[in-house]
Image (cartoon, helix red, strand yellow):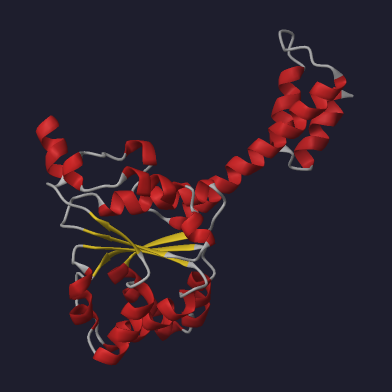
Length: 243
């Protein structure tokens, strides 16, 4: 009967329950009451499905770094407000459809912090996508050529959190300017966005170009956004010194 039960669990894809039930059949397993046994099997199945969901979300996000909050360096010279970051860890900013802007010179840890927030969002069940901004623009130009642009834009729009990294490394041309406007317009007040850039926000107007569109984009993403302005030396250089 146990063999049949295990096979049925496998066919129903109750992987967590299958593993847990198999463990209880071992000679040295804990002896549960009927109620405890049922609760243990259900909890094992719930945990397994939850973990697989988080794994799928994290894989789909395509983060640049595997980053967690516990690994963030809160050195005083970095100008990081630990309380602020811990509030971001709750992901309330996603519930409120707010934006976070992370600025600072190269190597100070912008991408790492953006990824850590993204990983945390995935762990709470939110859908996240991470992009190098220039690569995203290149991808969307290709999508326009092969007819998949609308589908890709709709996919981006549905994400609970969109992370645009390395924004502003290259001035936007007319096509990319309008693409960015469309993305920001779709998400404004509806979904959360994180933008990381080496440039201070004061320089974004020039990078975007075309005053009317630049004004419209910045009005939606800058004025009401949370700010993280990182300082200090490159984290990569610090790691090299430690080695």
